[in-house]
Length: 94
Length: 354
Image (cartoon, rainbow over all chains, first blue to last red; front, side):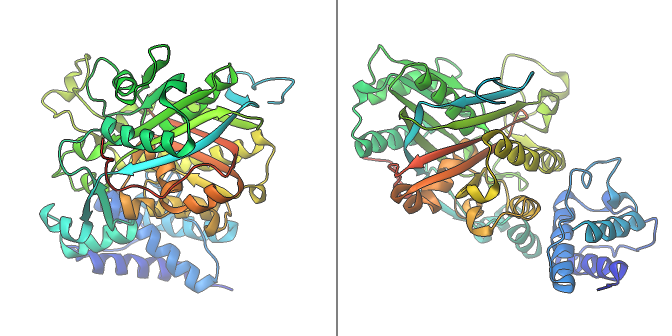
């Protein structure tokens, strides 16, 4: 089964942004540094929302949280394209 | 590690054959705080309250209503435990107290508790300053004492964490619950294995500044309240704990299917769910609701989970369990042990009459 990972990731971010009523919308591009724009609770919320949407789409759980997610240098959330690639890799590994 | 070779070089791996857990009692603070009601007072919006409820699992917590201390909670648990197991105070030969919220910097709270419980002066009593890894660390020391010849050892663990944090800090205040638990360790033929870790390089991820003798310029002016770098603690947990569980199983020569319950420290729902899925553990074997009902119980979270959600199981049948604690220090530890119909009543939500 193939899914639009980039679309799903953006939808999850949109859902979290809406729930939090963020004052400024996050403008997404491949270079967007999400790690610098939101707090750690929002990141955990994004992980949870993305995992739930993945599970709904794939019918299986794909864990996205790991020790790199909150690493200031290594986090895939430092660059949106890297985050989408991270999700894709996790889907492949799971 | 094998019985013939001992621990692997440089590893704190321990194996016991003559100590068993005989009983567990947990007493929590009697005041219930509901997060939905607390949130506005902490300056949180409805959206933030909903988010934290969903992500962290915050629902309610139990705290002490007044000036009660960890020693008070542990004393109540210990008295109930001794009465329930039929062990007299004068039979207890050692008391270990694991807490970050002692009555005083000195003397140790364990010795104060020794006096309150009426333990003989021929007993030994000492504190261990640990948090969320503290129950497993303390249990290891208690098992060591019994393996070395003692008959009855009391392990008391807990914190009045609500009094250790800034009540206006919305990142940490609504998480903390107050609890004091007591465990009785005695002699018996049973195999238990322990695996212990420590990493002081992560000490500032979770700490209480200006609370001791050392003066740190970076901490100038900071109140002596617990502060947490959430991202660093999250990283630490996901990096260390899955490997801890796998290593503990390997040390014990067990497969996940051999374990009846995985009782982990309860920091927040996301972390526990993430680990449960990554380790491939059935949800029924890994309770995850303690923090939602009682708050983060620190060193008491493992007994708190057992008394809170698994009391009937531990009281009614023989079980093989894995306990894993992780947190401040940084420190992390796990054990695999067997229990056989231990004294294990449901959690008490008030002090006893004494």
